[in-house]
Length: 189
Image (cartoon, rainbow, N blue to C red; front, side, top):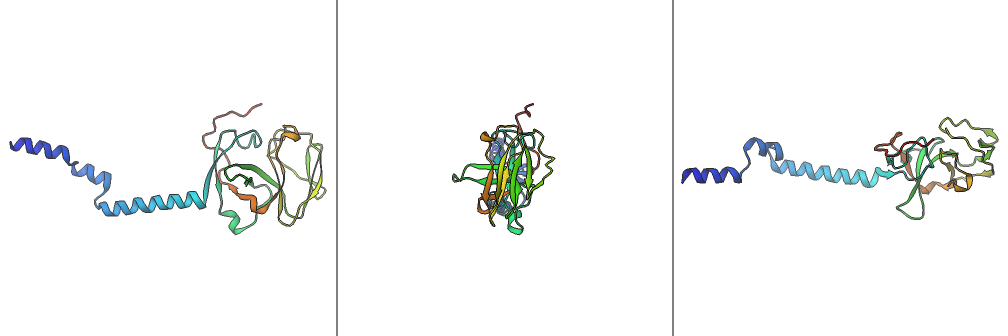
C-alpha cells in the first residue's frame, strides 16, 4: 500500500529540479517576469519595430522579394528623413506599405534624364542602383513637407514603377535591417 501511494505522488508532482528549471524558485516572480516580457514585446511591436515582408522587384537587388525586414519608427522622432534612407511609406490602406529609397528632400528639384537622377540640376551618384534604366522624368520641385522616393531596381519600365513625391506624414519609418532576413527568392539576372 505504501509503495502504491508513493508511486502516484511521484507521477503527480514534477521532480524538484525540473520544477525549478521550468518555473524557477519563486513562481510569482517568474509570472511577473513573463508578464513584463509580454508587455514589453507588445509595446515594441506596436510602437517601435514593425515587421514587413517585401513583395515585388522594386527594391532589387538591395532587398530580395519575400524578404522579412523591420521598420524602425524611432529615428524620425529625433530627426527628419535623410537622402539615401530606405523607408516604408503608408498608402491609403493601412495594411499596405511601399518600401522605397529617399532621393529628394523638401524644396529640391528632382528629374531623370537618360536614366540618371538629377537633384537641383546636379547628377546624383547612386551606387545602390545595379540595374540601369533609360527613364526620362521632367523636373518637379518638392514642397516644404515632401520627399521624392524611388525603388533601387530601375530596370523596370518607368510606367510600371511606383515612385514620386510623398508627404512626410506618410513615411512610417526607416528599414531597420539592411539585408533581408529569411529571403526566399534569388536575385533575378
